[in-house]
Amino acid sequence: MTFLADDPGLLPDDPAPGWAPPVPDDVELVTEVAVMLSVFAAEQLVRIDALRRRALADGGRYGGGAAEIVERSVRLELAAALRITEAAAGILLAQAEAMVSRYPGALASLGRAGMTERHARTLVDLLDAASPEVRGRLSERAVALAEELPVGSFRRQLRRLIEREESASLTERHERELSQRRVVVEPAAEGMAWLHAYLPAVEAHAIHDRVTRMAKTINAVPDETRTLDQTRADVLADLLIDGRTDAHPAEARGIRATVAVTVPVLALLADDDEHRHAQGLAPATVEGIGPIPLDRARELCGGDAGWMRVLTHPETGMVLSVSRTQYRPPPALRKLIRWRADRCMAPGCGIPASRCEIDHNVAWEHGGHTSLDNHAPLCTGHHTVKHHGGWSVEHLPEQAGALLWTSPAGRRYLVKPERPVPVFRPSGPPGASDAPF
Image (cartoon, rainbow, N blue to C red):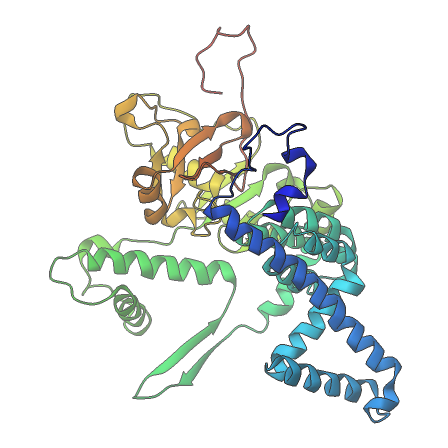
């Protein structure tokens, strides 16, 4: 392969007779093509933007009309030449303009295959939706994240960064949208209809969480034939129309919503979101939603016990380990494991931790402890792959709970938790304590 010969470091100074360069394996053959696709994608964007700029400069060739007409004409020509729709051509033109004009660092990274085309599209979509000030502050950081993370993790991390930067005005924007809350019925075919509710995200997720957990309890009955979606819809109708749950099994009637609210403890002392942001404090967040106004966080933190409250401070009394006194992690530890990871901790997986199984990295039967440094959430599919797919997984407690996955082909992938927990170490000499951190 030419890419081996192009790197003199891969060739010995004095090759022995019969020496041959190493043959790339199947994964290397695929990644080599991926590198070329990224390089070609960057070159295509450069040429598309050059086409647009030259057309605008030479408006007479396109009828001498306004810029909007010239761009429409270019879009039509590009669509015809590439045999794609005008809508797709418009997306390409917008992406090319953004990368060349606003994100040259991202374009350079794409050109050297530091990021993929999907990373680039995600970067443009999210940063373009932010304010110009936030966009300018985060563009370099966004490129660094794109070169480090899988697409799904990159999207979540960049969105979180943008939300944090924009959170100073979160209360004002939330109040504006709150005034637009409403419920709408959209007719559908065959006597059906869609019921849409535009309401605060916390309440929306709480409603969905409750009806889902009730539906799962009902579907656990052996004779139940409905799908989860069907039961969930029936539960919602029962609750809204009759306001009663008498027809549901006793196990389902007492179910209430559970939503994890994370509030930096020092932020609770700030007067409002603007002062919290000025002090460099992270915003309050809700799992699966994102930042919420500080006043709403205070309300939730002092509310019903059904809300799980996590105060992020290194000196909180968090449960770290129960050693080998029991196999199943206690509720507080399970919550902490899921909260720390936020998602399935397999490479690139985006399934929420709340839907994952808690896995012993070192199996219980092999002497593994029930502790924070030996647990991580894995979705059912990746849990099966870990144990039966030829992969090995190493927990790295010194990196705040990261997992190092080694594939059957020998490649290694580091997966970091979304919210690293502080690493605690004994203050005495080495070996003076058997604490896990």
